[in-house]
Length: 472
Image 1 (cartoon, rainbow, N blue to C red):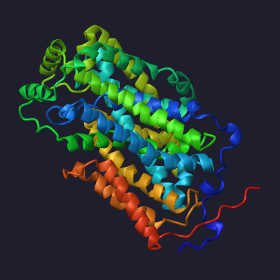
Image 2: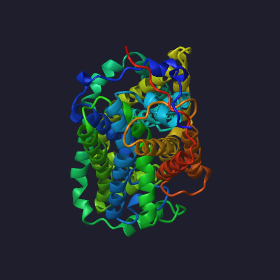
Image 3: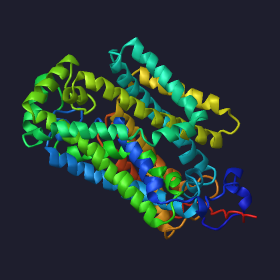
Image 4: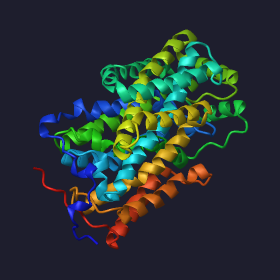
C-alpha cells in the first residue's frame, strides 16, 4: 500500500503551500523559547500545580515527590510531545495541517490535526474566560458566581474573539512584556514564603486539610502524585506540543529547535509550576500563614491549595486585588491567540464559512462553558485535550522515526494507521472523564497512539504516498 500515487489526489491547500524560506528564520531565543515560556507563565497553568481532589494535593508526599513529578512531566513534554513536531516544522518550513498529512492522509489531515486544533482552542478560551473573569471580578469585590462576573465573562470572550480575528498584530506587540507580570508575582510570593519551606510537613498539611474537608479523598501515594502531575502538565501542553510544527518552522536548525524546547518548555515548566508548589508549601510551613490560609479557606467553604488564592494570604488583600487584576490582564493575549489559531484553522478547513460566524459560534460555546462553570475544572479540560492530542503526537513521532527522521510527504485520503492510532489512544485518554482510572492519561494516550501506529505500519495499513508537484 506504500506505492506512490498521482499528485492529482492532493487538495489545493497542500499543493499551494509554500515552505518558509531560510531568510525568514531566526534563533531559538527569538521564537520558540519566548512563545512557549509565555504559555507556561499564564496563571491558569501554574496556579493548580499543588492542587488535587485529595487530602494534601500533590504535596501529600512532600515537596521532593511533587517536584520529581514536575521534572518528569517537563522532560516528557520536551522529548515526546515537542521535539518531533518541532524538527518537522524546521525541516519542512510547513505548518501543522500540511505536515500532519503524512500521518493522517491528505484528506484526513484536513480534519486532524487541522480542524481539531481549531475546535480545541475554544476549550482553552473557555478556561481563560472563566479564570480571568474571576480575577477581574475579585478586583471589584464581585463574588465568583455573581451576575457581574458572568457579564465580565461575556465581554472578555467577545473581545478576545474579535481581537483574535482582527487585531492580533497589536496584541502580539503588547504580549512581549505582559508575561513578565506573572513571573514577577511568582517571585515576590516565593520571597515571602521561603522561610516556611524548612518547616513544611506533609502530614501536618494533610491533617489541616482534613479539618476543613473531612470527606475529601485519601492522600495520593507517591506514584499517584507523579501520575497526577503528568496528567496536569502534559494534558495542558498536548496541543502546544503538536503546534511545535508551526512555532519551530521559523527556526534555523536542530540546535534552535532543541534549545528553544529546553528553555521555553522544560525550564519554564520547572520555574512556573515549581515556584507555585514551593509557595503553597511555604505557606503551610509557616504557622502564621497557615492560620491565614485556613481562615481564607473557611471563608470560601473549602481548603486552599492553589497558589492563585494564596496571593491574598501572602501579599495581603489590598495588594492581591491589584496582582489578580494584572494576572488577568496578562492572560488576555493568550485568549486572543487561541481565537487567532482557531480562526486560521477554520479559514483553512472551512473556507466557505465566514470566519466571523465560525469563530463567533466557537466563542459563544466558550462563554457558555465559562458561565456554567464547566471550564473551571482545569484538570478535566487538560485530560480531554491530552486525550485528543496525545495520540496525535505519538503517531507523528513514530511516523517520523519510521521515515528515518524525514517528512515523507502527504499520503492519499485517510491514512488508516493514523486514524486507528488516534481512535484507540483517544479512548484510553478519555477514560478518566468517564470515571475509569487511567494513571497519567495524556501520556497513556500518547503511548497507545505510538504503539498502534507502529503496529499498523508494520502490517501495511498505510495509504499511498502522493508526491508533491514541483514548484515552478
